[in-house]
Length: 476
Image 1: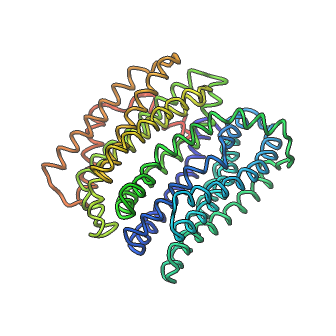
Image 2 (image 1 turned 180 degrees about the horizontal axis):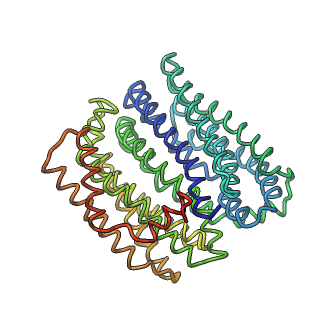
Image 3 (image 1 turned 180 degrees about the vertical axis):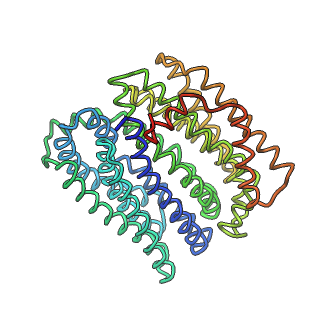
């Protein structure tokens, strides 16, 4: 089986699981938002964002380091996993204590503390799942991660439905997440131990110290990345209140659904790019260029359509009480485009062992984001937070482009030509939607036909794209 076919096989498993996750997540997002109301949904948003920021104290970048190392040396897996699992247990205890202390210092009320601590437990379980998923990625066995993701998704939906119809409130919903993730963890550990590799459990202090120190750049980057994408929710809660947080979080959850597709792509590509860096650096750059092209091909026209129908989308999903979220959606949708570019760039830099550069980029972006939020949130509330996020994403992409240029990687001019064609096609799509003024449901098929007709006429797809398609289909 060729490398392209292996990538496609793994992406297929993950993509199917992600489609299921997106559909189920879409359902429970709607139900939760309507059931909890704007303010309680704001508390939910604060709890998940806050625990997301502290998640790095459990991981400390070890997951990423394990994926990168095991993908190039399968024999090291038992020792790496056997030390990483107990090491993360120690970090987990520290995380729980730190979470409680910070919440008390913030003078949070009892409900906020309880819900946040419950989501901290869920986050710890997810961190272990992330380690096991990383192992599946390294061994290019995406089907097990796909099945694990599906188990989490379906159980989460079932238990959330039970919580809502049983009127168990926020606490019941938080417990739903914990149970679903714990069952998935048991499944993934079982298949790892039976079909992939058996961890050799020990707590080698010297080895643990070594992998922790090596992982620190990944940890710092992960922390800065999480702060960058979550601090606005925390700041909104403390500066404006739970209502504004609920409006912003409702939109953010929709954006997160789109980001999940990006995470599938990166989960499959990162181990492969790490191998390319070691064995064939020219393929490393080609995989980066194709990543940008294919991701932008989908997300830019989707963003254009979202801007035109943001109010319809919000009303359909959340109802009239979330009307204010339509303006946030029109702004935040562009972060998805920028995230897809920055994600591919991060993968290239990390695979090239330039994780310190990525850390510096996100350090600057995090500071920029926090400072700008202090000015924007008091005046523009949730819209200010959304604008800040987009501007911060633009800054990241600019810094990444400079870093890649300094690294000596010069993307082919064809990539720039392709991006221009995608932008032209998306622009024509926008003009058509504006002039036709169609109902949203009619606009979807009409827009798809118009867009792909334009990019086809612009000859966006070349021989290399056809070759990749034939490789996937096994025709080469």
